[in-house]
Image (cartoon, rainbow, N blue to C red):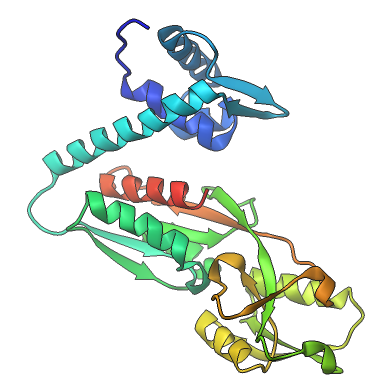
Amino acid sequence: MRDVSFDSPLLTTLVAIAETGSFSAAADRVGRTVSAVSMQVKKLEEMVGQPPLFQKIGRRMVLTERGETLLSYARRILALQEEASIKMQMKPGITKIRLGAPEDYVGERLGAALESFSSRFPYAQVDVVCEPSETLSRLARDRKIDIGVVTTTGCEHGVELLRKEPVRWVCSAQYDFRLDPTVPLALFQPGCIGRAMALDAWGHTGRPYRVAYSSPSISSLIAVVRAGLAISPLPLCSVPRDIRILEDDAGVPHLPSLPIGLIVSAQEDRNPAIDNLARELRVSYQ
């Protein structure tokens, strides 16, 4: 292959298509038309030669093996370019980022994103705000947080879908909820999407149940479960290792996955480090 020089817009578009799965969604992200995105892909493929970088499977554009190789380099090149740009523009002092996430999402995935981010920006200060998703969405609209990781319905404007997180019923290893004539539930506070899902699921079983405990804190729900006082529906990413996960054949109703979305500040003059942390979150929540 002849010597080629990849410019940032081409690589940015490649990453956008890989993460969104379509030319149209990628066009919205990078602020170009669909035809312009198509031309960029054509130019990239002319630069690197055959085989093609993408193949269409169903409705999604999926990377080929050659495309995956280029994607790994694209992410590294863009990260280095952004890091260099930010560090050359940084003024003395500490970069502060306000990150919001429900308490049940503050786990390994968020921790991995913050660890990778801190390796590039060791002097950045990330203030983590733990509130329900509805509150975080409002704080993002009011520009009181820079980034939000929230439960989404998939219909909100400005919310990017990160992943669909499995939700599982959990209980203490010593507790057999089937012996209770009325199943005690430990749920998040009213207004939480997960609570509504759980109540709807039990309502379809015809089996008696009651809300025995309600709390906005996942730590409180886990404490109740550990004590063998109730069962609770938790995102799989938040289940501690000492808590038993109940499968569907254990007599609990199936729960749909929780769509987790990303909100990024729409300020035009936002700190470039915010985009860097957002990218780390996208990678971590894949």
